[in-house]
Length: 160
Image 1 (cartoon, rainbow, N blue to C red):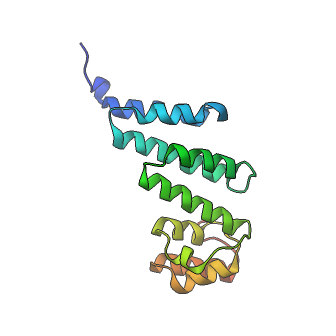
Image 2 (image 1 turned 120 degrees about the vertical axis):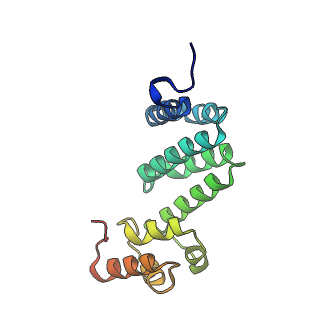
Image 3 (image 1 turned 90 degrees about the vertical axis):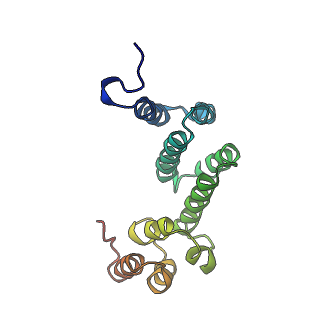
């Protein structure tokens, strides 16, 4: 007997876990093919979620690594028709830009999503006093403004 709810857990939950495990263990040379395979899943929302988690994990791991740029360019081609993931990768690239002390604009920072502003304001990967000052003054939420201000004053993240 085949049931989508074996052991009380929906089949898509089991596939989601398997996808996350596979994406975490995938070799760089096989990453694009695996992402494409995950996207062929019948549950598009679940597949996007699995790829989104993978993107966040890999971007965080590679953020200041020289491999980030090539990885991001390759992944951009693969996720081009996924608006949310394309935006998320663009914001990881902006976070990298700030973390490396490269040029960025106030409009990029203040126009970014709440997620990005929280990441920039609450993590140690944003050493830029200019970025923190801008977020402390013009961050979209009180949480972002307070976190950026605290990190600017103390040099520590509120999540430390």
